[in-house]
Length: 94
Image (cartoon, rainbow, N blue to C red; front, top):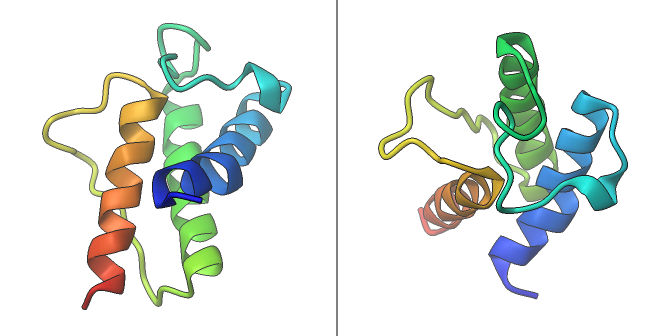
């Protein structure tokens, strides 16, 4: 399984579904937390923190942080997943 698919299935989908209280099958790559799921700033902050924790546990990384500002800013969950996957790959290559 490609890293991006693994991150999507094992981290992004469960974290977003749990945070927003929706069924995992309703979490889609092309959807925006704000525009499509009506997430507020607290939902977004908690999703980011829970994603950091899930990545640290799953990939045994001591400290994985997502900056407050990502450039370019992810427009949807698929882009966020790709960003996370790239960061994990970078950390693992150190």
